[in-house]
Length: 199
View 1 (spheres, one colour):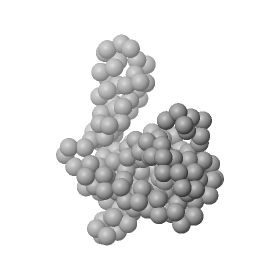
View 2 (cartoon, one colour):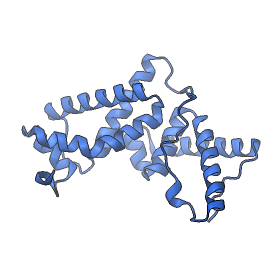
View 3 (cartoon, one colour):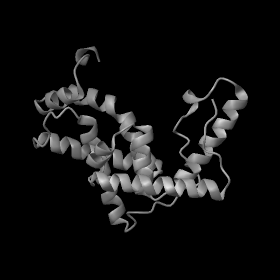
């Protein structure tokens, strides 16, 4: 919307609090793809991701209307934190907070690595196989480890930002990454998978 060109997400949130519903529509259109991708990566079920996405925005609207948001310059982190909490609440209710069973129809194929691949077809094929292997191995990681890997490598968040979003200490975030990398290396070694991309 041209009306909101140059307006930050944080300013949109405050405009919505002030009664401008169109500001919220713009905020939703700006953040929905990134937020849904994050939720889908963690839960790996489209219907569940839809439910969590909707509940996240219901909670966000409620918090905004209750004045529980202040312009900190980090609206995306704020909304991702709400989504993280909704996901954790769901898994607590299911008594399965730490392990997510992989589904046959979701192998992280929504994450694209093609932009980093060389233009030569042979190299592309090798690199595509490597990325496919990595995605399969990531599917085998426990949810907290998979989440930190996603945030670090696919969203380029710092460990401090990851800690803020997930509500744990930086040391816990680092520990989860450490165990994720140990597990990925172990799986790669067991299956004789080469993890280095070719350029």
